Length: 200
Ligand SMILES: CC(C)(COP(=O)(O)OP(=O)(O)OC[C@H]1O[C@@H](n2cnc3c(N)ncnc32)[C@H](O)[C@@H]1OP(=O)(O)O)[C@@H](O)C(=O)NCCC(=O)NCCS
Image (cartoon, rainbow, N blue to C red; front, side, top):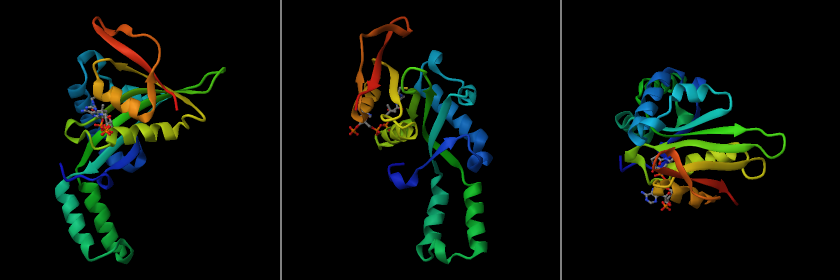
């Protein structure tokens, strides 16, 4: 795992036709990451969340390592430009049969209002425990903000558990600041939240 570089990750909206053959495994993995990262009352029914019209999910993923090595070896002496159609088809088949692995995901809502700019609300951001601190959380958040045109075309906001220092640091790094007072018992009795808005 330590050998990953950002170029090994792919990013996509989900669901998407391109990943349709991996649909079920992607959902299963996201649900499993979700269950490990959040307390029971915050675990989201991902399938339901992403079918809501205002919600979008972006995923970061990679293909499992043994096949990646195979691809690298194959690619050593041969550039994609020089591949015959048959070889390219073979490569596509290899990718098709590779095991996809979810590295992280972000779910956000774009909420329209008659009186102000649309609001981009970050609903969930989570990175697989073994892949944290590699810039993926920042990357997914920035992709989301880019897609909804923050700050020119949309304002961004979120709620975060005051105990989630890693997440608060990340949000601050990207330009969010705490707005207003502590929201006591926001998640459940004894678990407070900050409301944060992007100020840049
Ligand atoms: C919060 C989370 C999404 C961060 O993802 P990540 O990919 O590890 O974050 P990045 O590598 O992009 O880090 C960006 C910044 O976040 C902060 N950060 C991330 N992990 C941190 C940690 N363990 N301790 C302190 N700060 C941390 C740092 O400011 C970091 O910048 P730096 O690398 O320059 O120090 C990840 O830890 C996670 O999934 N946590 C569990 C779920 C969660 O809390 N989600 C947010 C609420 S929905």
